[in-house]
Image 1 (spheres, one colour):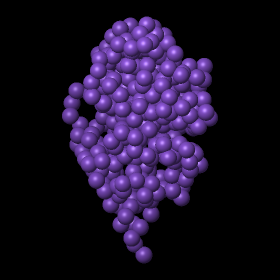
Image 2 (cartoon, helix red, strand yellow; image 1 turned 90 degrees about the vertical axis):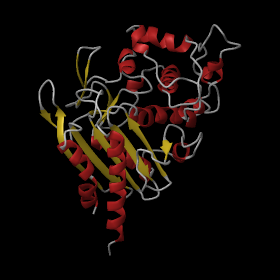
Image 3 (cartoon, one colour; image 1 turned 45 degrees about the vertical axis):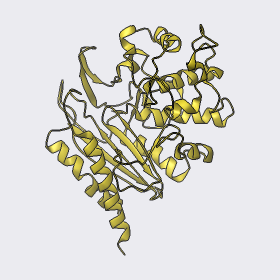
Image 4 (cartoon, helix red, strand yellow; image 1 turned 45 degrees about the horizontal axis):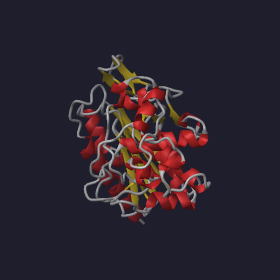
Length: 342
């Protein structure tokens, strides 16, 4: 059954590839009982040499790194009693804004605040323009007086969480064991190309696309993870069947904290990238390079859509939001129809 579901649900992505809006795409589905299927089309690279896409290619997961890697790390450390989610980041990073200990508002931010993007920090900052020494840039992040604004989805939140993990464990995030098919770069296999980067002067392939992640050494808290479709599905399967998580972590990623945000993830909301048809018990996350993962606990089904929509340039309209929504709705429609058959 799941093969037929994947075939129908892949139609929007196949059409986007055929129309030239994106170079390549792979859709993967996994059910709570372990059944899975994948469909793919298009190219892993157009430049500098054409390369067909396969199931074995590694995608730059971009911000999907936040939920697969950093959120898992923080919740594991909390479960082990090494941090408290509602304790300030300064428990792990005592030198955060160390020159204004009594007044700096960054020192009051908690782990849960950052996980749920419930902070005043800006969405993004071109940290890479301040230098290329990862240690110096980490010091810059910790000592900067960040401009205040309304609570928004912010990479800075997860850069801080990544630094906290490094301080607590005494090791870079790249040493965390995430399972087969998941790795901070460079990946141990063929990689999907992302952007022809004007700053770095080459097509990014097997190197992290995100400029700040690259400047911070390739494995910060907000991006940098690479994955195959099988690796992403393995992670999703562990959430669905409980084998890859614990009740504590599962509750944290499913329980709303701030608006539609949980610890790390988004819950279904109006017009979100997962489409309108999924249940209210669905969580998901997307990545700038064209990746995404959604888990519908109500149906016992998860799907990942992995594309290289920024190849060869981010500066063009690919219709990625519409594609994600159409794919999610197609997944659920095909799944529900197949389940309804006698």
